[in-house]
Length: 80
Image (tube, rainbow, N blue to C red; front, side):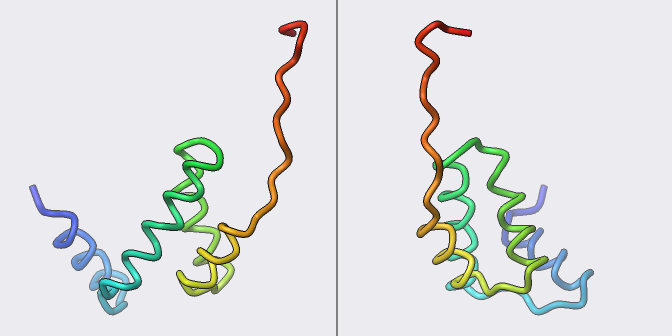
């Protein structure tokens, strides 16, 4: 089995893109962490995809995610 670094490098080559640098990787992983901690785990890969689809840099996407104001989810007192 390949390491994560090997897999990412190979996938980048397959896409015709340069391998992400350490700073980019750290920001992308931070974006995934923010998305997962502010909602559910599956939001992490979707947040990264949305950021890329919007043409945002990892730094821009992380800044936006960290500054999001989310509606609070109030528990239903009747349990319905």
